[in-house]
Length: 172
Image 1 (cartoon, rainbow, N blue to C red):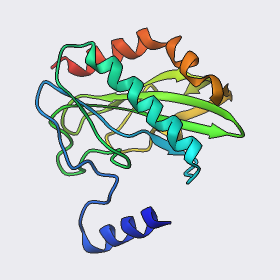
Image 2: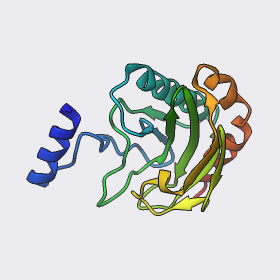
Image 3: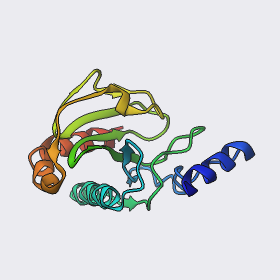
């Protein structure tokens, strides 16, 4: 509820909402944003899962040898006018009745297209990319959720695809 009020106030005043990162990162670096959670919830357990997904993204990013900037919750988006200076990494965490699905997101610096990579759960993407600042979850159909209690192991099965997406986001 507080997030909604702050976002409404930010919209009314013309300033960025709390979900917009206060750091754009540095050129040639990675910026790890907090995951999108859908449906929106205040459930602490779901937010702990989102934080664990973000930490896993951070860990994957540190293997690249470039600087990695980890942003706090709720910073999950780059500024609309300029995008970020660093390649932006994040995820969409979709949850339902103890089940989870995750889509990894990666974009090059600026107002770039966001590339989508299935990461956990059995899901289908209507498209493998979406426009900058467009909700990626609209392109996801979940056919089978992975147990949230087993999310870490499920993510490990697709780390190579995530690593490839990170490498692509770093290429100019």
